[in-house]
Image 1 (tube, rainbow, N blue to C red):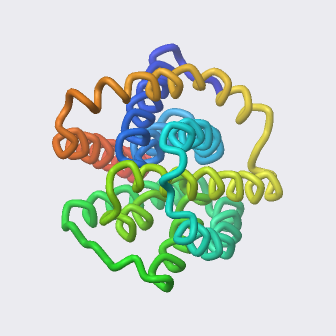
Image 2 (cartoon, helix red, strand yellow):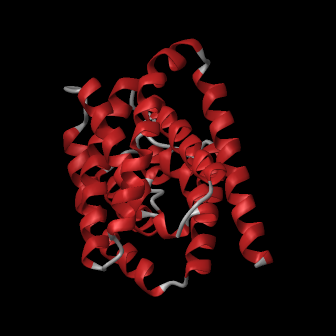
Length: 241
């Protein structure tokens, strides 16, 4: 599926803004970009967003190396395995319209939970279950951040970003393998990823100076507002089609 210049610019903007948020708080590229991809280029969602997110999380992990909670990350990854398999099956069996509505629902739920300030304790069982939910959501919709952000939100800034990035780098690769096995990754996916990689790189480079100057709470609030607006637009577009 081809896109116009304006549509491609919108995709690139969503990737750049999402990358800034991903670097700043440990997740967000999927929440910002996935609704836009589903509206403009549904053939690219979720594998292109997952590929771009893998690159961004690798950059964060290099920058915050040495402070990740690897034990907690390990239990989350164990939980992600069955969730990833279930998510890949959803991508195969769900019609495009239903998958788009699922993406919108995941975004709106994540925004609502974030606004409510729900904070479960990071016990082994809760981390495992969050990893399972993240695997299902991340593979099916490319939005796996909210469950992990909830269970790890008590970690300090650098430790949160490093732990989230270690989990999402490994988890994204797991999801991509599952999607490839299900036949959901093709030449279009790789081409679109290559074209949008500069936007993701720009977001990573801009995140450092921007996050030092902007208030973290207001930045996150603005990002969640954008994500909710994108999801609402996606719902309206699907229901009207």
